[in-house]
Amino acid sequence: MAKKKKIQETTIENFYDLRVDKVDELVAALKGEDTSQYGEVSMDIADCTGVEDAKNYTRGGKRRQFDPYKTDLLSRVPSWLKALFVKFWFAGAVCYFILWGLGISDTLDSVVLTGAVMGIIVDVLVNPLFRYMETDKREYNAYMMFPFPFKAFWTFFTNILYYVFVILCVNYMYMGLNLIINAVAHTQNHIHAGIEPLLFGVFTVLADMVFIGIKDLVVYIVGRQRKKESAINV
Image (cartoon, helix red, strand yellow):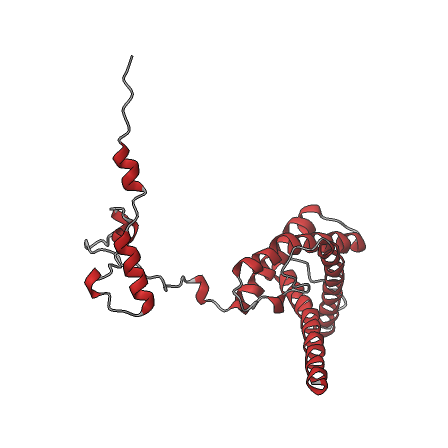
């Protein structure tokens, strides 16, 4: 029978050993005192993580430095550009999988179904994604019709109704585009602009942002009026 290895008590003791010198160094740094007696703080990734890994070194053999203030490439992209791209991408995906995938011939049925799917996706995927990417400034509130910080049950149905209306407006935008094309073409044959994901995504974002912009303007005017009334009452 194999003998079980005895776990040394010193291993556990060392694991939970309190580094008193590090605590003193932290207290001194918070107080603004001189911390030179504790030595220079290393910013090497290997020293910070305590792991000697090849990823912590450059190809030239130099040790990689840890930068706590380094921002990734995605964070440098403006929030408005990311918000519009996300809206455009999901709208194009809905067009591809619903309008193209199902191929519903009836216009009213396609509008209702596409709008319902779009509302569900916005409530379940798009808005939570905006909440994940936002900071304390709530910069993505201006790109949501119902920018509530909490998950409300009623927003699921209001988003569905709202995007059914948005897709209905997109349908009229296609009708207007076809009228313009035929008026400019001066031909007896009726030219019909087909529905495809790219233009559908553009039209959906345009219609969506128009109504969201109107909502944001109304909220701004009401909030400004309330501030004036509160200032007068004071």
